[in-house]
Length: 112
Image 1: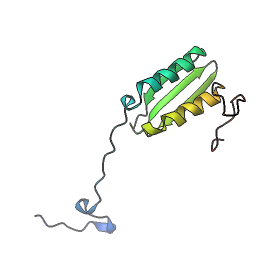
Image 2: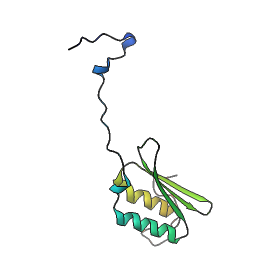
Image 3: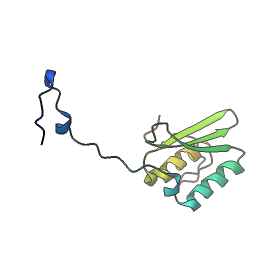
Image 4: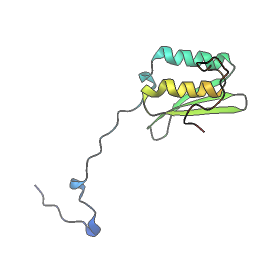
C-alpha cells in the first residue's frame, strides 16, 4: 500500500475523508399512480395546468401549478411527503376544505 503524504494546511488526505453515500435518485415512479391522477384531475378540472419536474441537481422533485396569474410551486425531497405537498397546493388554491368544513385559502401550519 502506498504511503500517504501529509497535505499542507491541515487538509486531510483523500483516503482519510469520509466517503459520501449517494442517495437513491428520486423518481416520479415512486409516487402512487392513483395519488398522481387524483391530484392532476382535481387541479385541471379547476382550469389550472400542472407541470411535474425535478431540480437541476436531481435532489428534489418539483410540482408547479399554473392557475390564471397565480403560480404554486412545491418541492418534494421524499416520496412520503406527497400528501403534504399536494395538500399545501390545494389549500392555497382554495380547493381543499379543512376538517371543519370552512373554505381553505390560508397557509397551512408552519407556512407563512
